[in-house]
Length: 226
Image (cartoon, rainbow, N blue to C red; front, side, top):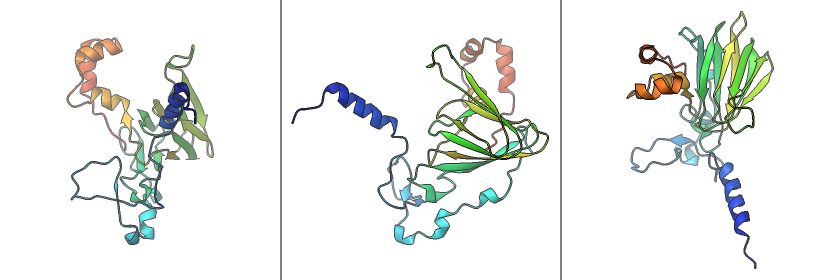
C-alpha cells in the first residue's frame, strides 16, 4: 500500500487538532468526582463508579433563582460547568444563566476553551464580539447587534465579547458553551488586577497612557460577576 503524501498527513493532523477541544467520551457517563488519593493531575475530572451514579448527578437546579445583581456591574452569571454540575464531565458542554439590571453589563471577556451561544429570554441586550486580525481589512472589527426576547447570538471561541442591558427593565439570558470547563477571563480584571501586577512599563506603552492613569486603574475594585 502506498503511503499518503506528507501534505495530506499534515492536513489530517491539523484537522484532527482543530476539533480536539474537550476529549470525546469513551463511556456513556462519567460523573465527576474528586479523588484525594491520586497524585496525578488529569485534564478533566475523575469518574464516579457508574454503578453509584443517580439521576441527581444529571440535574442542575440553580438556574431556578435569579443571580444577585446588586453589584457595580449590575449583572450576575450563574455557571453550570463541570465544577458545579458533575454530570457534565466528558460531555463537552456547559451552560450559564446571566441576569441583568437595567444598564447592567457583562463586561468584555473571553472563554479560552469554548464557543458561546446566547439566547435572550427577557429584555433587550446589546451584544458584540471583536474579531482578531486575521480578517483582511477588518482588523479588530466589532460585530454587534441589539437582541430581543427569543433572539440568539453566537460568540466564537476565544474572542472578546460582552452583553449590555439597554432596556429599562431587567433582562435575562441563557448561554450554552462548547466545553465542560470553558472558564472566563474578564479583560479589565486580568490586565489591571493581576497578582503580581503587570509591569507599568508594559501597560503604559500598550495603552498609550501616562503611568498615573495605570496607577489609578489599579486602585479600582475590579468586580467579578461570576
